[in-house]
Image (tube, rainbow, N blue to C red; front, side, top):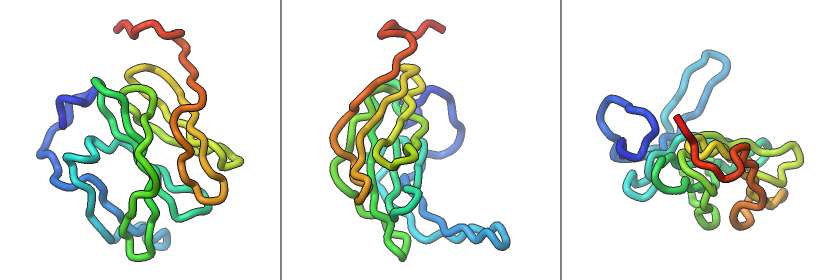
Length: 147
């Protein structure tokens, strides 16, 4: 939904929202394995992060009016994704980047529109998200952004 984005993309809105490719580093090619995800359910997926040692992928949604969502998926060998646990509120709007700490106990999410960084606990053995935001770093201390 282009109205929910902080920028103005051009083109036609996709019917599906998540595309899974296999990357071949030997020649740089990509092979499409799977297309899934209802664009009405997972609105404006902005960024995905693969777990460093598990077949789990995390995707965040971007919306400048409502808090973003973070969805964990199990990545199967055939490229299909199966949602893993509950969708987690990202604690801010226009969620645009995800990373995992070195100990693989926390997922960190950047909320662009709010200019916040949040920490969401993870199970280090399964990669499951363990509830909502544990900590928030807000350099504005709750004040609204001024352009």
